[in-house]
Amino acid sequence: MNIAGIGVDLVNISRMRAVIERWQERFLRRVFTEGEIAYCRARRDPVPHFAARFAAKEAGLKALGTGLRLGVSWRELEVRRERGQAPILVLSGRSRQISRSRGGERMLLALTHEGDYALAQAVLVSDDPTVPADRATP
Image (cartoon, rainbow, N blue to C red; front, side):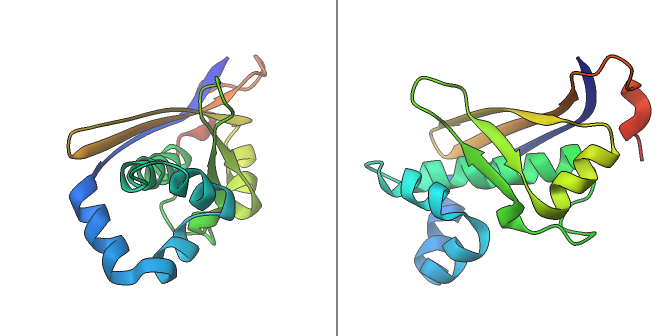
């Protein structure tokens, strides 16, 4: 396995709570997929889960090396988590094209939230041993 990019992000949960209270559905629908919204809303307090997913998207954008440029949008990076499984960051659209052009095949993801912070780390990897690890370097 080769690493094609790494990203990390930290989100203040109180700040995320204020953003959601202010912008409500407008913010949620702009940033999160239907699946992410349903997952978070199924929790007793959905805000830490939204914050972790927001951090995951930011970390994923950093791993891609793009930020919200080059035609990438928030909803193209989706956190999915099956019961009993580690979360993954699924890429679609332009983010998937960029990932592949940089030698990445999938995005590994670690999420946590504790106290007032949510943290995510994303690692863009290739399982192809012939893809050089520095291919993703911009």
